Image 1: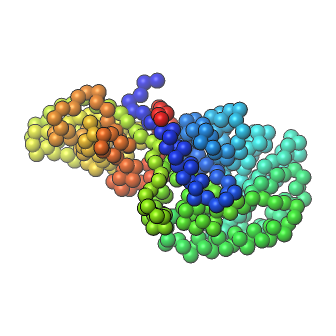
Image 2 (image 1 turned 90 degrees about the horizontal axis):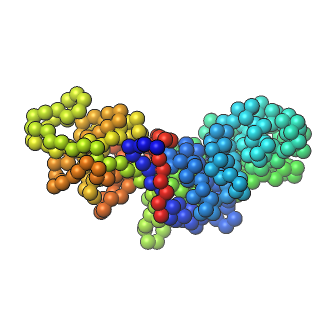
Image 3 (image 1 turned 180 degrees about the horizontal axis):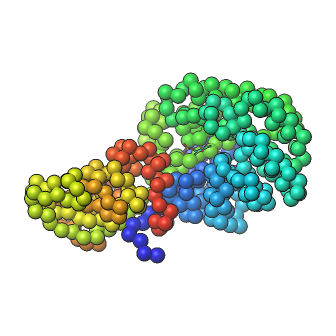
Length: 384
Ligand SMILES: *Cc1c(COP(=O)(O)O)cnc(C)c1O
């Protein structure tokens, strides 16, 4: 494959992060590794085997397609796989036959799953999602009596593995009341379900933020996404964590670096515009380097005149607009930079570092968004 940039994934950082997350989980709490969004841009095909090697045995995705990608990445290995969102009725037979677990949040999917289980003589493995206040997917209270009746009548066709819900923003204290209300609603319902002796689902609702900030929400399982990739969901959650820990250090390590190389260097005389339009004007003789990465590679156009890159361990400014496939940086301050020199867009080089969060600040994207926009076809390379 010919490619102008590539992504490195650090195997030791994966192990470090998974060990760290386990250390903040209560005893016996199951760890589901959330790998939707192409493993937050890291690449399902590359990240899942590393996570498996680091001890993960439960993976969560959004869609049936992502579940298929995980099952290809982990072919022949023993693990659990859970679809938290979209699975079309005509994809259900695949899931049931392959022991892939899926959320149920409306009756049509439930009834179809029951019919298919009967036909295939294989029990569908389901997690029942309850609406507690996010107002996204999940059975609303008015449907619960029907839901429980259908479940009880068909308990022979089903493996009711989990009872779950999702918080509407546990990463911000501004949502405290809403989160607490959701938690209380869930626990109340849990008591009701515990009375129904014909099922015994595990209970799960916490993602990264809640698992750190409200450890009492960890229950039987946590669904951890962003933390495993080396990021606290927000500064607020990081500060919360640090304020409660002796030593005050962020033990997470970034897994991903994004690198390319200098494509061309040239000198522009004073009094010229650089690139499209008039957004950058040279006030003096300016040396520039052209980098073969643009917004079509996931490098946001809003980083024009904002972004930074590392070359030979030094930070340089992106100047002018970010083009579809190229950007320019001002290297006037450097003695010598040559065509072919390594350029770091995210990650470390020498003493320098470009963080995802600095990127996010400049481009008004949250780290989740920036990561998941890294294109699937950028090569991933695993390093120690
Ligand atoms: C994405 C997602 C998670 C993981 O969230 P993080 O903040 O990345 O830990 C957990 N549960 C559900 C339902 C999700 O969609």
